Length: 396
View 1 (cartoon, one colour):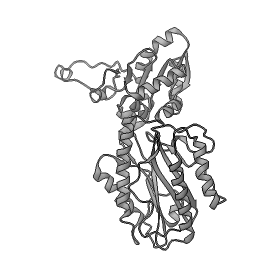
View 2 (cartoon, rainbow, N blue to C red):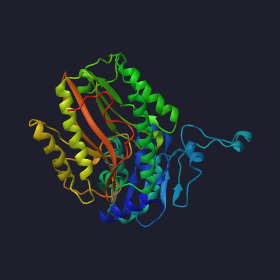
View 3 (tube, helix red, strand yellow):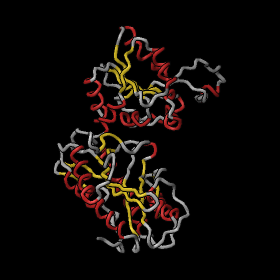
């Protein structure tokens, strides 16, 4: 059985959940390794669902008949129960013999209702559902079809399970970070006066497309000068000799959902001395955080370590968090978050994005960020190939 399934089953049992319905494409993939296409494209829960029963080792996937052949590699732990759709799928015999079509269309929820009837017949039961994903109309339909169900939100259970990576997931992240890191290294070689923000980002994207394994994240950004202090799409702004440069972005695994997130901030040779000083402060704090990571450490302690170090030099520094976990998109930042209020502990095989940013409106901005793997002995920096400092940068 997939380790992901084992972890979720244990969490469902701990929370007294009799049966669970999973509708988000990323969590269906997390459990099954399968991606319902139409659900993923539309993010409409009516298109697919995965059922986890408390008394059966088999997961039940309901999706449209048009996808049956896509899932022909189902293993013994999965059952496919598809529904007929408006696509009008036919087999060869039906076409040759001009057989009368069946108009007995069933929806995904009809199939789910069939599989949950055993629970409804017994009376009250706990039904786990992803309330953070499904729509208001879908939840109303769930309540109507399953009147005996006590609905329990399981969205946070998936986040908890996803925070500690399996060996297979660790290797996926190694591969993804390598692709992004090499793209950033290549981009760094093209930093020169006169280049445009869009041109540098094109270098980054071209490197990723050339590798061919992953895709650039659509939210990836780069900004020069005052643009480095704000959220902005890359523009035709031209790099000048006194600019700060901030890159923030990642790559994603498309329908496999995994994603990355780390940043680089560079300074041109004539950058304001204050920017030079600030970058060194942020970088040293971030590096100290990474060196201090160990299994069993509280996230709040890790935050305080980096935050207080910056505050020693910049007394009015403010920041809500200094990093986060990451797993499957579409979101990047995921719990556990490195902040002052999170007293949970760091665990082996977590992958964290450790960041120490500072943005000065109209002047310049930084985000010093790396992706790290928590090991039994500390932290391994996965994003070690691209530089935090360019050769021509001044340092305090």
